[in-house]
Length: 341
Image (cartoon, rainbow, N blue to C red; front, side, top):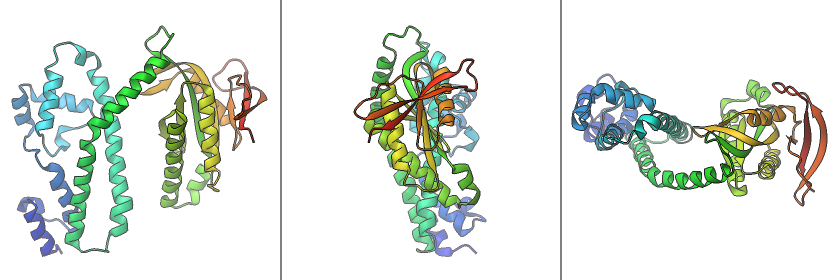
């Protein structure tokens, strides 16, 4: 039965009777956050199109590029009007050329960010406190979570500006001396967790999530400190990029050393370098494929490379023979890299 105090509290927050009809207590707690997210979104599809001066189907098409169905949205607000005017009012032709790609990759990134925020709230906040406070306080906590999420979202323009600044400089360095605009000169590496598939068969969902979160956080911290970056995480594997193979190898080795404290999994890595195809923030081509294949060849705790790195004060490099790798016509000469003790 719906709690009358909770219902009255939601009415004070702006809920209407038709929104509350038939809702359980849990649904009403969720509605508290929904009301916060919907604030200021007072325009429907026809109204926002009329305000911008475009066809509703154009609005539908633009939001589709970002992975959003207009039927699923709470509504449109002033920021939507600004975005639509920018896209539809462009006369340079640039939006027609790169708009769909840029909006698509932005939509993918922001969708992942939104999913991550929801998961963090449900698993770390809502689950932990459920039952510890009364229903009205839970509703207020849900609304506070929405407020904090929107505040973080409001800071994204500043963060994006910083990322654009650093990405442009990375691109200039990576394309120095490269003739083709689709190619950059980079080192690519992978580190994966041997044993994670076996672990997933008997570990709890919480244990699996905790293992991945520890691994990804270590990877992010190590890569940033060493001057590389994590391109993406793929379940129990991360993809690393940097300007040279030594940097990627150092990141992989430190990540392996830090992850060896996790008894259930055993990390390993592979590194290659050369001309790499890049598109929408991701990398492709034989260098990427080779780094991935070398990762699969490495034993736990080892990093393999096809690069003839020299021994240094930090890295010890040993010949590891020639390997026949799937997708490569000729055997590949391989070296094993370790941290010099």
